[in-house]
Length: 207
Image: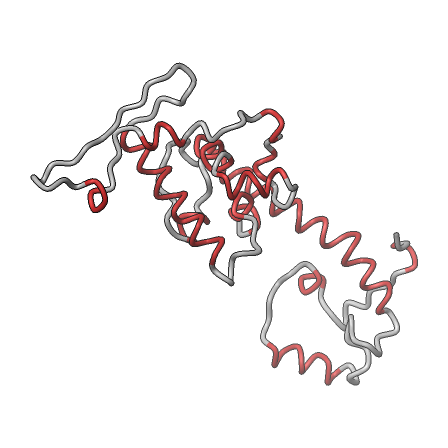
């Protein structure tokens, strides 16, 4: 860990707001660099304070940004309604995942596999405390029919109702919300732009 005492910041070269993430145009940065002789811009290869600057960013600025990001994410969760809703787009995912949707998502086999392999955050859920099977699949199948595959010759179709003492009790709206969300998870994981992104931690990463 770098010693902050060994780092001297010349605020005539670069403002503290720039260090903490305030954005500015490239033309302004170019002008600052030109006025300073082109050799003293923080972080450049020729900057004599390069090592100290990097230590400052890693040990001070980045932790501050991380605390702010997580605080914003926590506040977002506190004020969001804990109601099952279909998550069918990245925009819906950015709004946050309601706590009541976490287990239906965690039990979805593709997500569960990655949780067990410790490849994703998985809402902090310990897979060792989860049931062996997807406890939401039976309720989702109950009373549900794929019309195109079960349609009979006379225009009728069959549905099967499952009842047990351990499956979650869900309304039709909640079942549809889970079903749509799981379908979107498949799309999310197959898209080359998001396939390597943690679905379960996406709202926090993009808070």
